[in-house]
Picture 1 (cartoon, protein in one colour):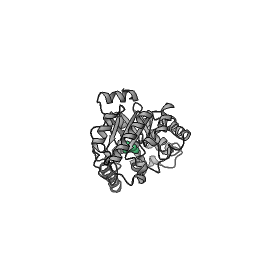
Picture 2 (picture 1 turned 120 degrees about the vertical axis):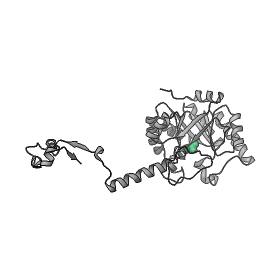
Picture 3 (picture 1 turned 90 degrees about the vertical axis):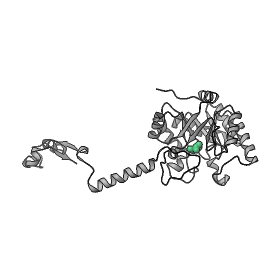
Picture 4 (picture 1 turned 30 degrees about the vertical axis):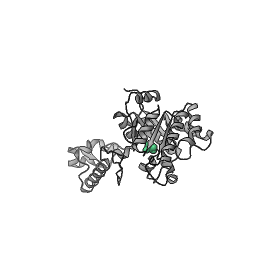
Length: 303
Ligand code: KIV
């Protein structure tokens, strides 16, 4: 059995140019399959709001949602390093509340680390969490919890001012003690420059090839949604949505045409056993099975 990664080993992976693979997961089976497939880190992202709960943004996701989903992921992936998102407005709202919320995610959810969106403005919170023994992953670039503030899901790092801010944010997070940073939707040259500038692993999503690792959303790489919208930065590895829809359609057809259940799906019993299943003995039963020649000589099928 392989051992769970640690934040020290992740730093070493960066030094060794050993890319870190990260995938989101939100429940027991997806986490178990990701672990079996050899993923390095699982992120219980607040993208669960979009891909699992059907919200338009991540903003409605609550701390209880994250704790609930992290708990099932932790049961499914017991040897994998699990990072869980701190949802909108559960940090940056006073030191004590931030610490209490992070502690809840770790204690009740079973995550090994938390992820927070933001740079310079949350560095003091990051520092307090790290001092309290909570590993923190930062998240800068496109930060979906600020989608309304940013004016949409736009690529970051195209303007000089944006680049300057990204560099300041990345440095502030590293100084505050973050063990890693997610860079989302950032131009490749800027993401590469930040990865080279920092000693902690930079995990990219839509940030090109120069990062120390990559993260993608489970439902995106598997096309597990309907409708599925293609994204430039995503590579899809299967079309599970179509597979599932076709399979359910076949089941519906089979039920309606009587092709399911078949002989192999039913349970058989000797006629003499049937009355007891109805709460009485064969003598006391009024089912009168032994008078029915067909039933007496054959096994009967129970519904
Ligand atoms: O919530 C999430 O899934 C994320 C990834 C997109 C990095 O933050």
